[in-house]
Structure formats: structure tokens, C-alpha cells
Length: 268
Image 1 (cartoon, rainbow, N blue to C red):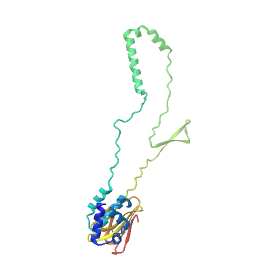
Image 2 (image 1 turned 180 degrees about the vertical axis):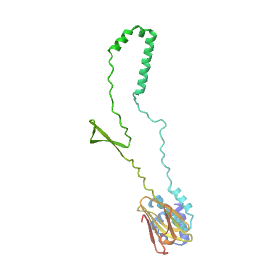
Image 3 (image 1 turned 120 degrees about the vertical axis):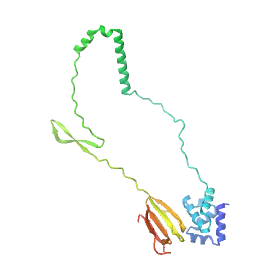
């Protein structure tokens, strides 16, 4: 037998109301109230909605809501979040890398310097001057090649040769700057604060992105905050007692006529 269900049923019977009457006054389906009293939590909607039902039902019966929610959490059970732990020693595959050009260049210079020093020390370089002269006589200097001046192009420019713009047989390059557009910022969520005025109460139904998030009677002084991505709708049975704030902007009461249900939606 569920401890939470026993306390809820005893409080309801002590108050002298039936499940049908409690369902009508709290605006919670009778089958949901019966599931709470029987401890059949698998018959309830999601965990967030079930907690909302339990909070409203406990307030209606005069029980401490936070204590009832704690008992519900213990009976239903809370699973720990899955933690991804990296491996202590990651597997490394066999990799092959080629020596860099800088390494090969340094090694070549060192080898040439060592060879030259060896020739000087051994006297071979001084004893064979004819070889150096013959080499000098037969060697032909390479004809220098004039390279075209490079046009600096930034990462945001496009090189586009223009037909017909020719100077000395060479096409004149045209550089067209392409502006860098800022990355669009994703839309922020809709934040709505609902406050029930002191010494008042109101039945409310909160619909977030097309799903009923919370439904029941809220007492005076209670403040709720809801987040939505597309739209949020609040139905209030006592509109003058329910005030809303959207993204920090005070909107005011949902309606002006007591006891006449009214609806607030954002975006309107």
C-alpha cells in the first residue's frame, strides 16, 4: 500500500468529499486522483504533470505539498543521470608521419657543413683547385625569371578577371569585396511568470507548445514560471486574481471580471 496514497485518501475522507467532488473542485480528472490514492503512478501522465496534480491536490486537502512531493519521489524512484567517463588509456592506432621540409633542410645543411669541414681539414679542397676553376668556367648562370606581382587577396575577396580590361595583353584583375554577414542568433525562449494575488485563488490551465503542462487550483501568493519555445496559453477561472509577466515585462491581470474565465496567449 502506498504511504502517499493512504495519506491522500484519509485526508479526503476526513474532509468529507468524494472523488467525484474533489475532481470537480480541483479540475483534475477523477482517474488521475484515483491513481494518486492507489499509488499507481504508471497510470499518470509524465512526471512533471504528475507532480503538478499532486501539488494542487495536496493544497486542496490541506496537506503540505512539498512533503507529499518528496514521498512521491521516494515511492516512484529517481534514476541517476548517466555519466560518460572517458577511458583511462585511450586506444591509439599506429600512425606514420613523414619528416617535415624544415627537418630535411636542416639535416641537409648539417651534412654539407660537416663534409666541407672534413675536406678542409684533410687538405683535399686546397689540393684540387683546377676542379673548382673548371667548374666555374663551364657553369652557366640561370636566366632569372620575372614573376608577376601577386595581388593580396583577403579571405573575404573574390578575384574576378573582367573581359575587355586588358593592359599590354594581360587581363587586369578586379577585386570585389564580399561582406561577412553575422551569424543569426537563435530565438530566446518565452518566459512567463504567473502570480496569484494574495487572499485569492484561481483555477488555471497552462498549455506550453500545444501540451497541457499544468491544471488545477492555485492559492493566493503562489508564483509560477513557465518556459516555452513557440507559444504559451494560460486559462484562468478568476482572471482578475491572475497576473502575468512576459520576458520581464509586466502585462497585468488576465481579465477584469471575477468568475468569468479568460485566456492569455503569447504570442497573441
